Length: 111
Ligand SMILES: [Zn+2]
Image 1 (cartoon, protein in one colour):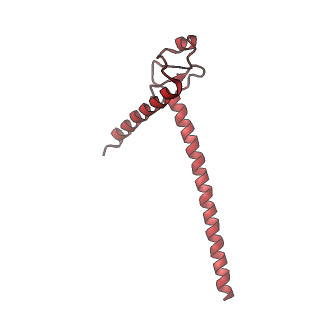
Image 2 (cartoon, rainbow, N blue to C red):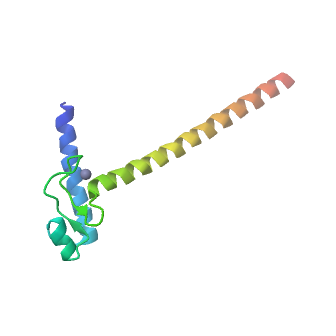
Image 3 (cartoon, protein in one colour):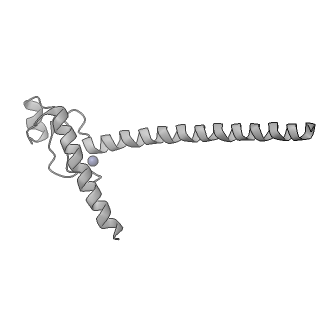
């Protein structure tokens, strides 16, 4: 299977699902440029060019940040936190196993 083609497919699906979520959250925004969006009080505008990560997606009028990138960044931060949590849990299990092993060895020595 072609990895790249698969990846492209995933990305466009990702954008579609983001678009659905975004529309649900903010309603139907007009695809205005930044200045026009600012004038009409819209929170987001539609860029002329894709962002540095290639997303053609809404950006915040305030900071000009790509919503897709922000979401991704938040997701990655969350994944990182979850991974760290998993790792510390694994360490706990290791410590527990080690403790049990020592207890067993102690018992065997007593016998
Ligand atoms: Zn982006």
